[in-house]
Image (cartoon, rainbow, N blue to C red; front, side, top):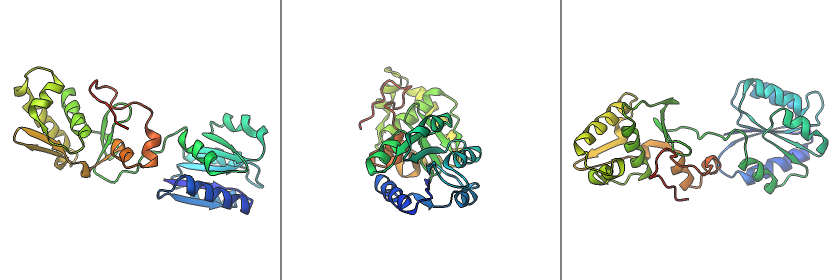
Length: 252
């Protein structure tokens, strides 16, 4: 995650930088600038997830910088930082994510990070990315993985939910249909294997005699990261987990 901090007053910038680092202790690329023009020139072609911008600055004020950033980074979370409340209406006209009054502190920064307008996506590190918060979805390199059958996707979702635990075919059969359809179950397994092979992730799914599982070390999953206390994943959770499946319950 790349975070841009811009304030033309050096002392205020140091305070802001310290508060952001304490509010977001995990590894993030925090870039601090006293010169808004330089901040724009050095970041207009690089991803920016969050921008904390002082409003009252010479040459290029925070409003101007925000508009420029939004033209090249449409989903940048702009959070204005200022000592003057009268700018609030103008700030929200720019669809800002938030507004912090000086003096800044860790609590104010945390409150804004918890309510980002555009939740920051987790940086993918594996071949397969799995989204459990909201509706269940599977991606490979940002592109949705296609399953031939809706039940194949649900079977895969259940295995993801079990996070590497082997699940007996009888249990899976009961979850998916509540009746005996073991003969059809083989078609679902074949579909999952085919879908994952098509995106080069066939080793994520493991089929053994009368049981199957997923290898959690080979997928990026928001729910897994939440359980690891990853702040980005925690902010992504809005109370819905695999919403299309009645059996899905998320233990926070």
